[in-house]
Image: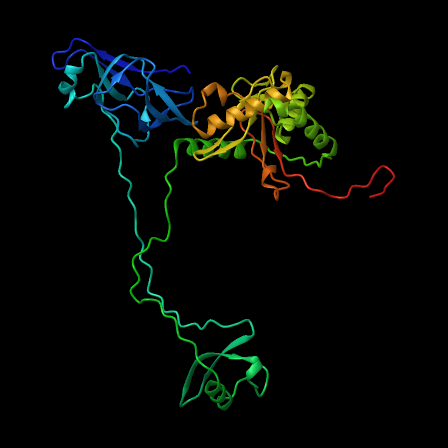
Length: 389
C-alpha cells in the first residue's frame, strides 16, 4: 500500500539530538481523520524500515502502518485509543542512537497533539419495584374483591376447583370459601433497594462504521432506488456444483453458490453495461466501466466491508472461489489493502447462507449503479412445461 505520510525531520536542533518526527499518515485517498488502535513498538525498541509500527483505523478498515525510518523509538506522542486524529498530526519520534532516547522523555512536538478522551458512562437509577404478582397457570383468573367493611387482596383462583354464581362475577362468600380451600403461594418480592443498574449501553462508533452510515445514508437519500425481484431455478446449478467440487476435491478447492453468483453477475455486466456504470455528478457523465470488478459484501467485527474480485469476467470459478476466500480472511483480520476494497463496479450482497432469509433489499454503494441482493434457496414444487407439478 502507498502511504501519504507527513514527516517533519529535525536533525540538528539545539534542544534535542538528531531525530525524525513522524506524522499521522493518510492510508486511503478519502481519509481525513483516523484512530490509533494499537502500538506494536514501544519506547526503546529498535526499528527497521518496513517494521510494523502501529495499527490505524481509517474510514475503511483497520490497517497496519509500517515504519519508513530506521532507528529507535524515542517518543510515542499519540496514545492508543486516540480518535479523530488529523492527517499530519505528530505521531512519534525516531532517533538514530539508542543512548539519546532519554533526551526525548519531555519532548514537545512541533505541532499540538490530540489527546485521548476518557470514556464517560452514565448510570441511571431504576425506581424500586414491588412485585406482588402470583405465578399462576393458564387456567386461572385473578379477581379483586372489596366490600365497604372488608378488603380481600388479589388472589388467583382455579376454575376447576371453584364454582362462581355467574361468569366473571365473584361473591364475597364464594371468595372467602375459595381462600380457605387453596394454599397461597409465597409472595416473591424484589428488594426495595436494588443496586444501581444502567438502562442502556453506549457503543462508540468506529471510524469505519461512521463512514458506512454516512455513505449509505447519502445513497438512500440521493439515489432513486427501485427494486426488481426474480426467482431462479437452481437445479442445474446445484448439479454442476456437485460435479465440479468432486473434480476439484484433490486440489482442495470447494466452489460455493456465491462463486457462481459472482461469475454470473460479471458476465451479465458485460452483456448489460448500464449496470456496470458510475454516475459521475460533478463530471456530468455516466461512466461505463470496461472491466468488471465485483464487490462482495463481507461482515466483520468492525463493520461491513466489500472486498473486490478484479476482472471477474475473465476469471474462472476456481480462481474466483480462491480469491473470495483469501479476501474474506484478510477482511476478518483487518489486513485488506486499499486497492482490495476500493473501486468496485458492481456489488453482490448474499444472505443466502442464513437459510431463512429468502428476500431482502440492499442499498447501492455509490458511485455504482446497481447492487444484487441474494436470498437463500428453498425446495418447492414447480410445474413442468406440461403443467405437472
